[in-house]
Length: 353
Image (cartoon, rainbow, N blue to C red; front, side, top):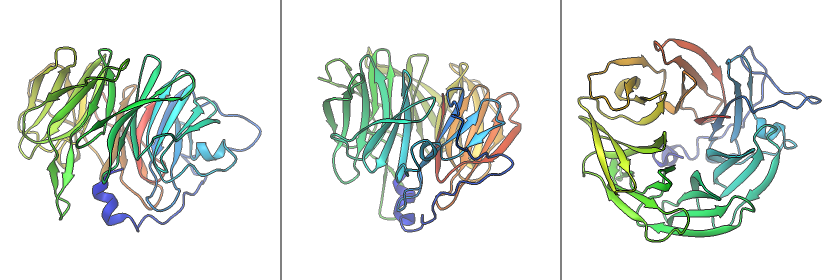
């Protein structure tokens, strides 16, 4: 949920999700259980005032698209209003709903609901897993910002850590839980402002004595990812952008400067390459560890909201919070547009299942 677009659009998201059959979207029918375990799950955030959140499934070859798979496999029940993110552990998928403060745990191949977790949730955002626990950030913009932990075996609440400003992205890296505890704030005119420059390292076993890593006071923290066991933080300003490689054990970082590439918004990693979106929707590809000059790989269509790179394909959704939106898929080889299909309302994420 992006607070900047929610405030002016809170009363604009009024259309309900429609399940339709088209050339690129199939409607599921009764009698045969679809296996969702070999494809991509698409999180559709939904509008802010109506329960239009749900999940879309895309086959790996992009040939089959099923919409509303949560509702279709759970008796037509609407998922909720704001599906923020999805995580996986074993045969389960965890659907984190910012509104109405819940985590629906489903079987990741059938999408049948197994249980719902609500204890101590307050605007949950993102989820990560380590050992026998899962960790969920809670970012109530007018209240507490915290990290909750639950036992994977029985979903019993383990404990929380509170933070002074934000609790946004969360990943597991180097045996630690890494939390983005600063990022974007807004002034009265909705202009972006930095809240600060901290990343917090949490011991997943004890959740005591967290370590704060303070990054340079420039730009705004935009993203946090983990790749091959290492955490990376994206920071951007109006001139340059920066990728910080976090050494969570030593409590420090190394810096890659994207000189002259401003306002980078989203960071992903695949096959030892970084991918990110910069000004004017330019999609860049850059080998991890390089500082060589780079050129855009492709130009995305529309106002990109969801973005990821999975199995040699770049997925980018066009922001739409009042009706089903479009997803464009590009090749990582040459940036060629491979396919465009319809997903759901406010598509915000893509997950390899």
